[in-house]
Length: 117
Length: 115
Image 1: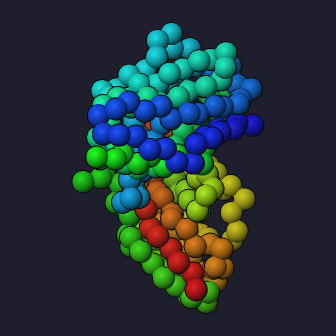
Image 2: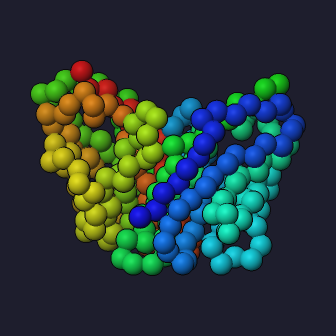
């Protein structure tokens, strides 16, 4: 079974500063994918970034980067130069690549990020 | 504008009502999903359709009945719901069940309140 743990229910950051949102995971799969989604108050889940378990380099997408530490089973999201529009819920998720149910995304409980002006 | 459209955005219903949630994707995908998002709980996968065939029914009570008439449309029919079914219901789609990265594209959700 796969499990995602996000230990920060809420985080605050000043505009233009960087922030790290924590995510740890547990899986018995050798090959898996890790995802981060953003959910603003409108409700839509927006895909931000993906990291494959065999990717040698940490994923980056614009102001988003994923600090992947495989041995520690962590996949923290780093947002640089925070903007007011970054205020939202952030979800970490994973998908195994083995077996017949590799389409299932397992989500964490989320972290509510508030960016202060 | 999102490629996945859900209607209605908000729904209030009594426990004896019958209603339906609709999802339409304009992305040319062939897999569609229903997720339930309750307060302070992780998203729960409810149903998965691939090429209009149901491939997952994640122990969901029979008062929730999905329908996928074609690859662009997905419905969730609701009847005799309970107050604990109040939640945000999110529809998602993907190209194939896994896709290159497994990325799902979500709609904005239907906020359901059961009185």
